[in-house]
Figure 1 (cartoon, rainbow, N blue to C red):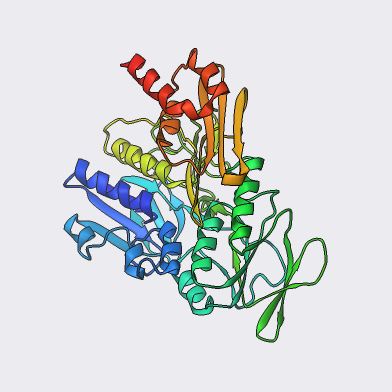
Figure 2 (figure 1 turned 60 degrees about the vertical axis):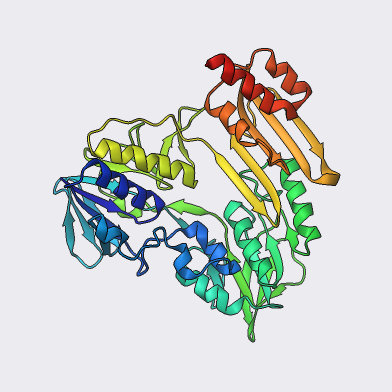
Length: 413
């Protein structure tokens, strides 16, 4: 059996290792299009921060890890998938055959169609090559403007702040981390960040970037004087890498549509990770949910089914944990709510808790400044526990969620 995996990020690596455990004699090929060993993009900000070396971003630290597992690493960009021939074709024309194929190509950063976005010293922060270029310019006192204050943007922001730059952030949404936090919570994070000396502009967009000597003049919506910067970081979001699948017959929406076993619409082709539109845990509809816990779970499930060892997903669930300059925030499930909810706000102490219910089931939660037992919120959501009388108790005192978790867990046992 020959398994080919396109994409050597966390999903691809975990799938390859799982396949090796399940099928010791299988031929496993892991394809990546960058010259470095497989690494974690989520570790790049920690490299910029100075907490780890470049090697610290590598997913597996032993140089002979893949050789010991007899996983063949191949560098190249896959340009086409030919299901009838059971081959993938590289950009240079070479081909690789497969019996089972896993697509784990992840996402790529969005670059808004803005004049000047391709100028020197305007970078995304997505690859190690990006990180090297940013580290060269992000020196203490340098002026850095970042576009985007989403989950990834906030992690990058913290790394830049640690480098001692003069930082400003421009976010199109009405708050920071708009796809993870409620309006109140996102506004609270903004207050925290501004208190740390970072300028935050919400409901704003970059409209043009122009070169002025050695600096960049950045025009922002609403007019006014352009903001001057030595470096511009674009963290405006990501989209799945699916363009190379045109003509393959694989069903796609915004990402690759997969069933509960991570199978695509084409036989013997699977997909996992950020590239997928998998069934939502609550909605039951295809959803993009680009987070690493889901990617790892999908990789495990895909590998089991590629090895004919049946496995199925419970559904894609939002799981977000973020450290923003020392302020811990989390959101789980349908945090934005679809029914009853309760919100507890302590703005002065940067503490916040929101619980969202559908009937007597907790379906979503958001927290700021709460670190004790916060995993119980995820547990209540993932188990779909019927709360009964505990719902009214939580509406009256949402901080009693740990007691509710223990009570429902004992009842289930």
